[in-house]
Length: 133
Length: 133
DNA sequence: TGCAAATGTTATATAAATCTAACATTTTTA
DNA sequence: TAAAAATGTTAGATTTATATAACATTTGCA
Image (cartoon, rainbow over all chains, first blue to last red; front, top):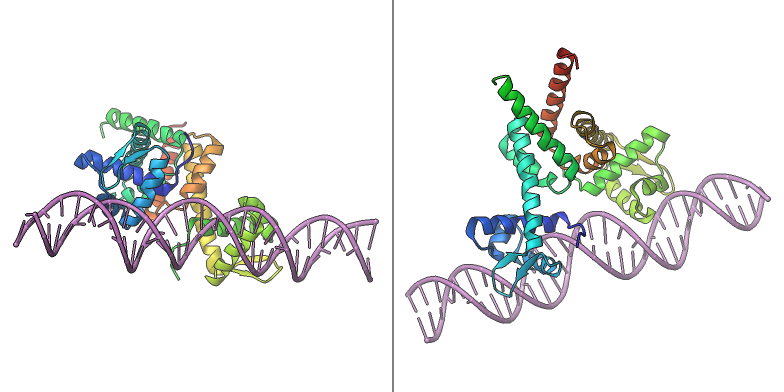
């Protein structure tokens, strides 16, 4: 159940999660547009994800995340959010660059390092309040 | 001249740089051992790197970095060093995990974000001295 | 110094991720 | 409601990165 997904498959899951949040549904066309790949590529990826039990996709129908698929999608989105916040708001990196970096690093950062970053953000924020800046 | 290398090719370059630093020379066998790939895979990668003008590799001979190859290898190594230092020494991440994360993220972090991290490390260090801790 | 061991290379195969082109189904609309 | 447009799927090709197996060269030592 816990085999490692490729960066590509993680991106598909994350995108499906985002589309469901935004539009209630996720379609092949939307995934394709979002990831800048052809819909034939999307189909192949969806078959793999369905085989792994991470999505449900009936022919010509919408794409849905299973419970496990949603867990993974949310986890990756969370990593992206933390990294983006850290880069853009704490380090002061340009927002476009911060997002691009976060979208790549979300696939490789360990839970341990992420946890330390979250802890660090908390500490920094408290200090800012204490020092009134 | 500035086409983007794959993560795999960057790892080969970086490893060659490390071996030359450590042993004066880099051999196919050592690269293979270091990266945990077969020497046939190393050979294929070396051909690609030679085509791109990043290494010199005469048949059955040692592998050398060109000036441009060395520049790239050093750049990646520098990114790894900064990330490792930041994770391990500033955030307090376990050294093994910090290194593993640094070795993956060194391929995706932008120069801008790296520069902000370097600046941040400098600031933190100064504060530590000022606050005597 | 010649042979065995170590090292390096090439040929061929496989997996992942993408593409184009052809085809199928569904949706929209005249 | 039938034809056109939009969307989805499948087949087959390409690229990258790896592997195994067979072969070539170099090195080290009896």
